[in-house]
Length: 181
Image 1 (cartoon, rainbow, N blue to C red):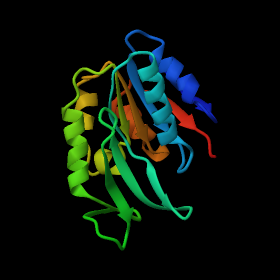
Image 2 (image 1 turned 180 degrees about the horizontal axis):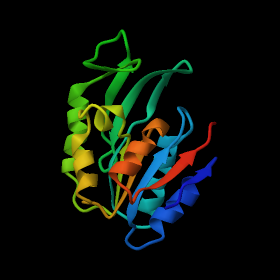
Image 3 (image 1 turned 135 degrees about the horizontal axis):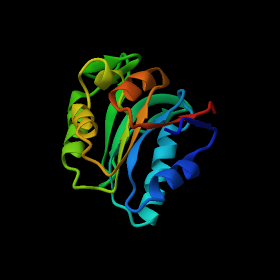
Image 4 (image 1 turned 30 degrees about the horizontal axis):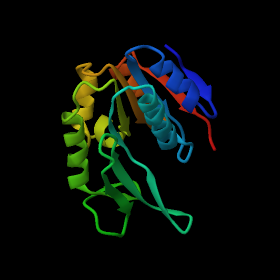
């Protein structure tokens, strides 16, 4: 198992995942808020496509307004379709996690994205968090995909405090932790 700490790992992680043909393994990407996890995922998706690999799943980039994080989108990696997953508490939404109100229909769409995967070389899920790993809600299809090893290579974003749960559930996972930005 590779438990490495890098400050800017996109190329190193992409090389580790994509140098095998086809790519293989389960990878967990973790780090504190604003450490670049989604950016890293997006760069790895780009590298995978540049090398002819098929990629599916979703990324969840932050939405900023006036320098303040005001939302979280969910983007289907295959189609580029984007929907608003979360908004700051106090605005319209259906499920609260911390300061975020999550839209159940967008969570359901994330599960549809996972169910629609067709044997991609790389699956990316940004992120599997407390909803999935502690509450049995959220992207449950993503958990099933990983539990049943229905992937060639998978990259999953998880919060640092959830890494012990991830390592226990999937002992084969290789974890990479980003440093603070």
